[in-house]
Length: 197
Ligand code: ADP
Image 1 (tube, rainbow, N blue to C red):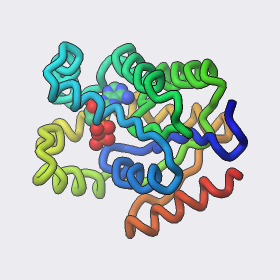
Image 2: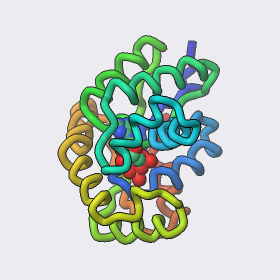
Image 3: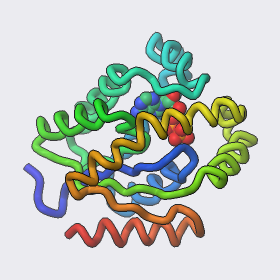
Image 4: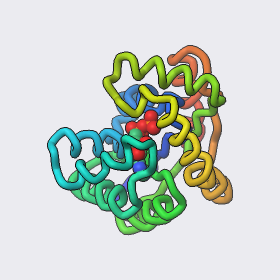
């Protein structure tokens, strides 16, 4: 059973390089949430050399989305092993409409729901700059090639952006301007979350 204020499930939404990872870290400590980043989970699988990790890397290295069933299964396992959480921040998930539908169904099973979808809004030229810069230090191969970055944007445009409409229809989407000081963007996100109560 969750109390009115004790459970908060939010999606941090936005294109590659929008700052989801950075803002997630700040949000989890402020609101004591569990962080689910499917990108991080997939990279951990690859690091461990699991079959899933090896297969996922075929997609990741090209900038393509990993098949829905794979990421949905991973998120499901993560949630099942964190049933004591006060809520989750979903970062980089859902990335397709079927993933969004699966997430809704899973949360319903847990007697929970998505409370808000916070969108970090940043235009593409700024994103490419940020990703190439990150590629110099992150060691992420998918941040180092402009071609892979371009494929990731295409995937975002075609498969992920429709999710905004999906949650907008449920009156759950809230956009925030994602350019500026990290702390300024963070306080805007907090404002939106605190307005829910
Ligand atoms: P970014 O937001 O910078 O693109 P992520 O770490 O979220 O980085 O994702 C890296 C890659 O992992 C994606 O390009 C994609 O190949 C794969 N991936 C991550 N999350 C998902 C997901 N929910 N569905 C499908 N593929 C995913």
